[in-house]
Length: 139
View 1 (spheres, one colour):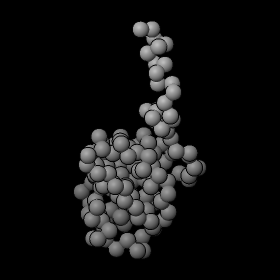
View 2: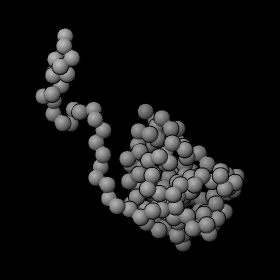
View 3: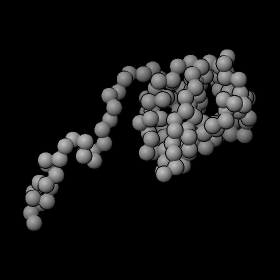
View 4: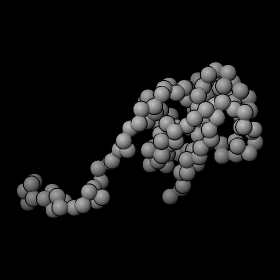
């Protein structure tokens, strides 16, 4: 079997059957300062390349309670908090907050990397004081 004939059978497949990754059209977004809470995978940083990402651990904020973390993040001029704490909206009054919050449904990297487009879209769509959850189901 020649090299050319091995791939020839795939040339007549419809575009939906392609395994090549399709990227959504990129909308220009403003640079945001993003704070990664404890538990957010570091690998996500590469997908948020147009933003400034800081881990709470690097600021020595990993042991701070959520209420205090929100106050510190707003005081340090962070635009968005990326967290894995699904109960944050029930435990904190988010009505008067200026910081946006995006919550990841689950945090293992092997799951998160399957939903990078959804996470990036949620981050880019965030507005001051907004709250969004990105569902990441266990499969």
